[in-house]
Length: 402
Image 1 (cartoon, rainbow, N blue to C red):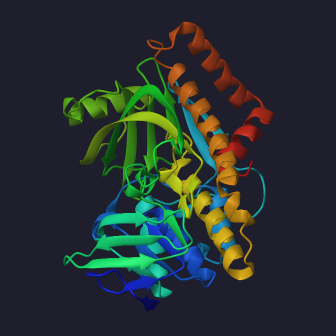
Image 2: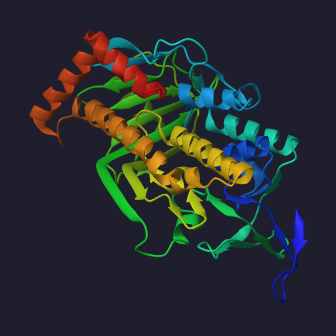
């Protein structure tokens, strides 16, 4: 990076092509793809490296994302976990139904890969390739986003002030980050939906299921997902304003055994529990001047279907290729259409996630939806279990290959 004159009272500014805000899956994927393209970038992260590496989140990297990493020559380096068996289990009132989430095509398929494993591998790969990654970057601020050379300022862990000028800023710092707040009021339109549903999410040192499991019963929705060879993530439908302290270990395991239809379900130490509200949010457009919003900074999707992290990886791929076009050929067309291209995928996945969310919740406890909606949801599940056409469509949407 070249030194250029900084503002009075600050250290000389540095210059790069892209400043990436956030070192989660979105930011680190952007950084790695830019490095593979020979494009200079700096990744800024306000948390410590240990904190970022231990964040527990989604565990499925869908087929489309696996093939994206492979196309960039990164699949072997950044994807941990094991290949998915391509099977999802629905358990309705204790009766098991296995549905394939494979689109039937040959080649690389989805991976069961906990987010923290992906983040650690992306971090190691980025640093091994000479990437510039700065943790504990506090008080980040963005300036001149509509000019030709935006400026990013931040404070280091030792209190020093730093300034970086760049061609583009990739805002990859999530729903509560500073990137989107740097956009003036009135520029973005927020499309929001509160599903009126809460989940108690529980992480436990307990045996994972053979297949990812979604369970429907009159007592409410539940799910069981692998998070490693000896770790499981569980979900229990609950009121959105419920108190996690009201869920003792005994109550958690009793509810899981009942809703999963498995009286012999093995238990283990619960290491984390929290309640969150299911919501969906899309900001349109996903760019402002030279700032491009990537992943959760632009959109939040209900966790049903595992689309959140995968949408972030899709955004990162579209953005990195657009920047490469600009740097290599001076072609800005892909940058200008970034938002339009990403939002088409976002709304497609939002629709699928909403469909699946309503189906598995309405089909169980009908206190909120009523018996008519419950029977409609049961009919949708029955069609999924009995129609090869419906199952194929479901598989395409699950794998991201639609």
